[in-house]
Length: 635
Ligand SMILES: NC(=O)c1ccc[n+]([C@@H]2O[C@H](COP(=O)([O-])OP(=O)(O)OC[C@H]3O[C@@H](n4cnc5c(N)ncnc54)[C@H](O)[C@@H]3O)[C@@H](O)[C@H]2O)c1
Ligand SMILES: O=C(O)C[C@H](O)C(=O)O
Ligand SMILES: [Mg+2]
Image (cartoon, rainbow, N blue to C red; front, side, top):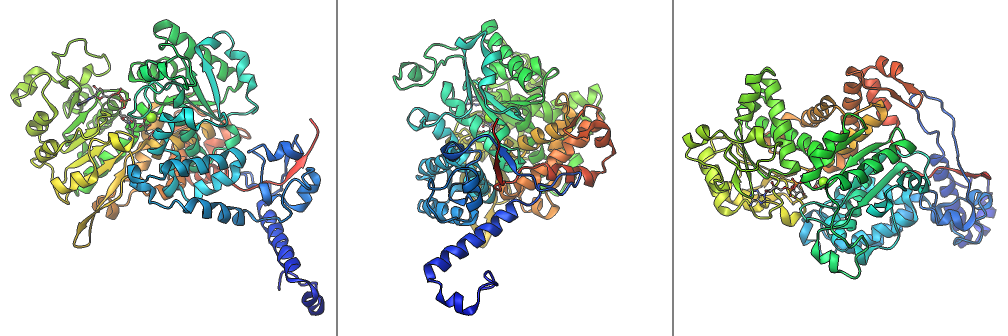
């Protein structure tokens, strides 16, 4: 009764119980609204509550997922925004709304980490997607608070299934589509997007979605899923994210013949024609939003590395599959060294067999060898020595200097014939032969071939010279993983490190022992790289910024966890990890003199911040999913 202090006991008794219930609900809604109206914290500590000004009213606001609060609109807002009569009369608190929604979602309870075994995954995605369409704040609140459970639904692996079934699932458009037919028009088309400020774009051309190949226009789902993580993990404001699909056709014969396919039904553009489309897109988005960051996602390897080289010194952009993956892999590889009870500085002694020489594999061997070389002194012989620690195997077997038409990006890692013949290997040697002869410390897969780490390959790894061999089955989605943790632990025993790109459950090894299944996915880094770049206002994203991001993730893990075989943090702490990674990126951008500042934090002021102040600056600029008070004003 404390919530009605002004009512006399007599009056309280005479109120009907239903009226009391309604009053109580309104009162708690009012206090919840008051909490949400709390001043938005900014680093400069101006403690003023600022309502959001909107130019919409009535049904337009209920149909706008950015502003819609559904039944949580307070009575005064309902008056102000002409919503009276358009909603059921009870005012719900945000928590009551979530409780109601979760009851529906939990009907389909199956452990989402079970990945391919969650037969309800698509149904859960549909329920969440419908919420995303009508109320962004509530959607992201649920995602933030239950990220471990629902990341596998809105992101890998379910997002792969969503992309594959996109024609059937498509309801409301999300993001922007630029097609080969829009050439010459993109500069004006970008103004069709309603937001004047866009912080993050994730763009794909749909040519290599996870390990599922060319899915054409249906690949938009991956850009949406990545941006969901930008909002949930990095606190990028959802009004300022933009998923983009560049539809230049598809080479997927099934889609070319599918009458329900939503994209251009012609073969992909190639060569200069292709480049001209991507160039025009980049010029257009950076003209309208000069401070935007563009993340390239799931471009086929043939273009991923070329586009990265083409744009990275001009635009604020990075390629997640090449650079994000490399950073996460390096953090995991350093964890694997520590898990052997050795110092990280022993990393250059690790023998690493990599299966897959696409954008992801090349990204990893490049960056990991640079990390080794730095540890060895950063001179030419250090690089030479670092490169000699990698054996790269692709669809045609071990890559050596004898390989015909070798890709220039992998050439530095082609094995010298003299060196491999000494080991009893030759050009094109099979993966199992390579593992048998090299006896590597680490076997890392980015091949998109499910089951590539067969029993025979895992058996061969038993002879590893490492005291604790590591298996990284990093291909996505779940069915493309090179092996499962059950396979790895059952063949190699408990004394290994296991990581996979898509989530798997830990393995019960009996006697109270757990085989830990780590998720080695670029989701640990791309949100922090994007956020750090945004808040530093770095002109470009340097190797140094990527390197500190990776080191920060590695350092996040405590010794006792690593010794247990846990080399990546739990997904539930992703917001905290992202904050730390972003702060490291800001610091490095400042140190490299790349930072130009963000909003009222100019470059000079950024330079003056201490480490702790940078972390606080990042934290205070992360968007929280709480309803702001809305006030109407005519345009
Ligand atoms: N875990 C993560 O964070 C992460 C990040 C990026 C990519 N990935 C995954 O990595 C995979 C590869 O991505 P990509 O862009 O490099 O793709 P890609 O198709 O360009 O490259 C695949 C590579 O694997 C090689 N390959 C094919 N069959 C092989 C075999 N039998 N043995 C050895 N190698 C073989 C190919 O020759 C090619 O070099 C995808 O499944 C993707 O989902 C995971
Ligand atoms: O999307 C993911 O889960 C990771 C990565 O970007 C991939 O392409 O597989
Ligand atoms: Mg990807």
